[in-house]
Length: 158
Image (tube, rainbow, N blue to C red; front, side, top):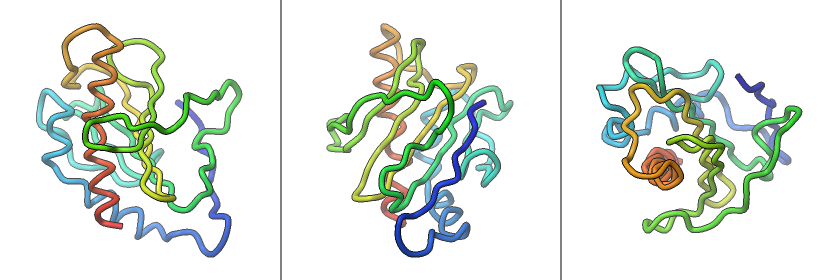
């Protein structure tokens, strides 16, 4: 598992833990359900992500990291970290996003941006995820677009 870099806000006070919990709780279940083949487990707040959504058996899920006014710092700071592109219009819903792909049927990371607020989603595992059909790269892109409503919910609550 990746190590998390503690993020600092360039100016002013960083948002409180309560703000992050509020934003995580604002993610609507109807945007989480389509990610899984079975009903998802209840949201897990905190831990190794701001919040995590998993399949009932915990074999797969999506970690959510919210970065508010952080000056676009990188989420990860570890050896071997590499950039994965620039923000582009990823979906037809006009969401400014980028995603990384290291093979397989899910993206390795999806970042969505709204102003200076970045939402990062990292899928893990595959058993229990509702993976789109088709070639792996196309399926990963489709899954990345399926993740974006989670970020939209957090933006709307901010």
